[in-house]
Length: 448
Image 1: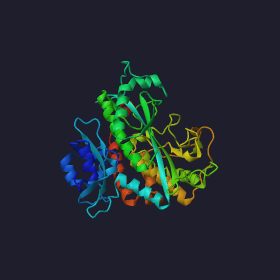
Image 2: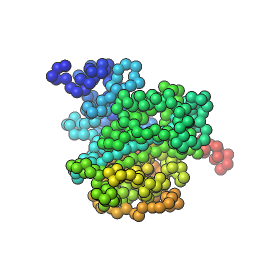
Image 3: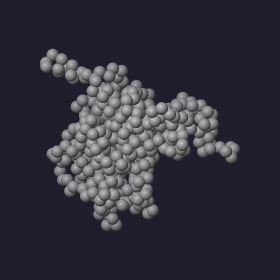
Image 4: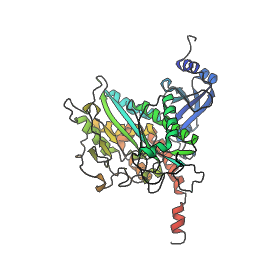
């Protein structure tokens, strides 16, 4: 080892790495970047990518409105986050993956990137002497391979040789149908230092949920970003797909990304949501109040696709409003039972299809505004929140309108970023509105 060897160079040498995946998450949370020989990557210790990548839609298109980026499509300089380097455990050759932050040539950060937006929110907490803690829970479906997008998705065949039918919430035997795949997921995650908690079967046919251990929001967003790649790869190795679509199947529950969040004192580590006697503090109430007031305007980050709003349906384990309650799963904001040090609120609104960086940033931003403005929440509900009115927007277009009209949230997340995000989502919405569905052909073709 030489004195000039960087931590990444040393890590790659110690793991006999031959290739490096240089990654950045785009607006949709899709991995973009380059695959490079390790020698070339270590010589550069970074790379350039066009700034227009932040405006790429989930369909691979670009909006007409480029006002949030340089119209010359200049390069971004990508700098490796050394703490993010991990193995790619499914690669044929020893391969590393490194997540990068994006900067302009003058060294200023690219304000329209997902990681920057989350860092921006975390900096606001730090300036107040606070440190957020989060724990995402990700639901997803395993489905039979399907090359025809017009054909409805079906559950895959398990070890028994049969496809799952009906709903088997928390079923152990039906979960064991996918043991070989689950073993790969656990092995791949261990190799990547993705800390998994519990695994359970959810209500839908072949719908699973894995909880990530609680910790630093940026680290957990990285883990969620990598976890999605991991599950998709493991599923393909077993002849099936894994999907994080919010609502992939008719008549089945949608898939969520529940975000447990709390705030601790950065100096003492004490949870500011609970007092010495265990009672909920004024800061806790204000955090919940902020979530209640601003989550509707933040909805496009938690439900970023046209499909996302199919999940927001009564009685199918998804919230329809921003009511809150203690140990109440019908509410959008649930406060789990636990010790005072673990006092937290579970945001149940976000879908599994959300970009984890932006969903966590938006959720924490709403709570932050509540804490700084001293917003008082409504009384905690008793009974079912499904008997109460809808309070969440029910379309992507309505969500984007509410975001643009919400000056406090735009101020926290950044005007340049929200303009870029809105341009991307407007483009995706326009593309969707040009599609004629099979439902329209079936029921309208000869009847209207």
